[in-house]
Image (cartoon, rainbow, N blue to C red):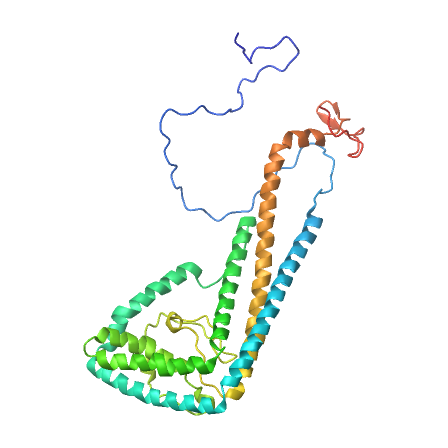
Length: 390
């Protein structure tokens, strides 16, 4: 027996529609093709408001749990910040312990000893530069033609990753806001990581500088002396991108020590596209670092031992604390938006699944119609309305 849904059953029912609503399609016999990628997405405009009803609908106060949810989100942020504060105190205790150990090793006598070693190394490097430049008179072209382009490619990659760090000024949905928060958190985390790396470099300046002079630089000087004629390419790189930067990174400040390197600035200025942004209010640069600076990483340098704690305290008080708090707050803000997206998706999914029940329950039981108008005079209040009429 076949059933024709367009035939009436004899009751006073509405006639079947002449244009039935769409229904699911049957599977296609042909193989499906991948959809085209489509055009680039245009800027997203805010959604247009839904049109007002022509009916004289009752005004309802906004029914929302946002007031409680806002309190929950605020408390969640405070918990996140408090947890970070607890971890931060432990980190500060560790920094203080390391600084106390370092200042005991970095004595006046050892400082004077390192100054002498650095001055001797400076003279040796100046002599080495003269030999390499004489053996490879086109040393600058070697750098500009073969090494700088490689740095430029890294610079382009970084520009594509981060741009100039500017965040867009408008968001149009929660996903935009989450991405904004993610970008903001990433930038602040990178700042914090730089400051942590600088602080780590200053944990034991005596040992680090001693190893740089007596081991790393001395080994490199010997290597360059033996190879600059037989392997000029390697010598140029080792001299201008490793040895000189490391030697100058650990140098004493000329303004306070009165000591000036014999290395000309001409041997340090090339690859002009690679520029960092100095932040040296505490003395050590906390970046953003240039690519060349990142090749050797942050280093401690020869400062008067009496100034050691001044540098450490400045870095912690004026850079590390603020960067740490910024990351904690950015992380809490990101988590809040991320949780709001999860709640929104859950609300949408559940709302669609229960929409039939929700919609029928929303209609008052005492609805009366007069012509095409809705008579709400006998409308029951929500607390009197039956929960279901099925």
